[in-house]
Length: 228
Length: 277
Image 1: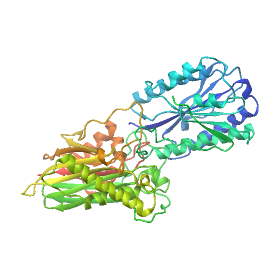
Image 2: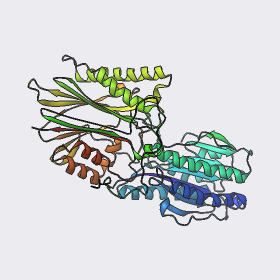
Image 3: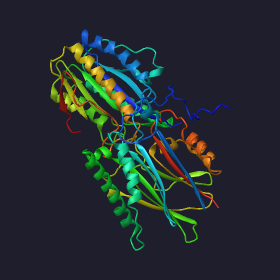
């Protein structure tokens, strides 16, 4: 039986600079996010979450999953540098395969949403090529990307990564609280989007509009995405 | 006697949802409305029922429907689906149906396309007037809309239906056990989108389709809450099996439309018109 699926991808920087409080906070928040989604009747059946971590390389920590089937949430561990290119390349290949598999199973996937989190400038120079391949118009399931940054990452980098909106920590909150706020936004977006997708949503046929994304996030300054 | 639970098609949802708290509203918008009719040549069953997502979140049913005898020669049936993000979309859907009743004029000399555009612009005007009366933006009342003007000949026998729509409501004919879409095939997207055309903004993009009412056929008008699960063959086949052998009782019809299919928790509205001899 055909089901309506909302795929979410959390793409998280686990380079050395994330060691300590930032990664600890993400590791603390993830199980709570999973529990909340899995226990919400209007969300649990539809939402799927995949977690990808990246440093020198990228890795699928949690394959796109129905969160009721997840018994142990993977943990992030600090290592290496900050290769955006590795993250975008793996993300593109993972999304392509996930969407193909969902459709082959007869399901109806909505456009994927990516929450990209980083605390630093990329350490690879040609990540834009991998990003272009991920966001290209001819890639049917190209995702909507929201980028969140703190630490050393620069606003123009986040704006180039995001396809929809970016948020940069403004120092109002310490990293731990800024990441708690990030986790809250991820959860809100999954819940609100699943509820909204129960009904036809927008009169604008060009909008990917069943999704609900934050306008403002406490402790962050909003940046509009560059046009892809 | 035990009344059967709703039929589950495909995997069951992990949650059993019953209507919760009443939504806070200034108009009557019951969880479910039922209607039925029989006349020479036609039997009609109609239901508009709230989806589990709205039941769980104490939101009103955003679908609406209407069924009227206009004259000896005309019966009007319509379904509307208020857009999910609009605060007052239930009002938009209801207003569209009521306006469809009030503004239907048949001018024999007018081209169908012109008539449909004029008719839908009147319906759009009514939605805009309701938004103005309430002091809200017209987008808050945005709704998709599909209507069937069913015409009878001089002997009172049903001849054909003129279908007109804006947005993603569906019209299907059940012919010899197979569902056939009345409008041209819907576009096949790479990934799904909930985006749709809607009134009052897109009145000029009304689609028109005449359909003949052949003996033994069933004409179904429905909102996407039913059209989407019907993309799956299990639901299509089950409904064909139920409705292909003639009209069910009204209670049975409500039970049938209330089947459960995982992730399909939107409001459902269905008007089924059986052409009988």
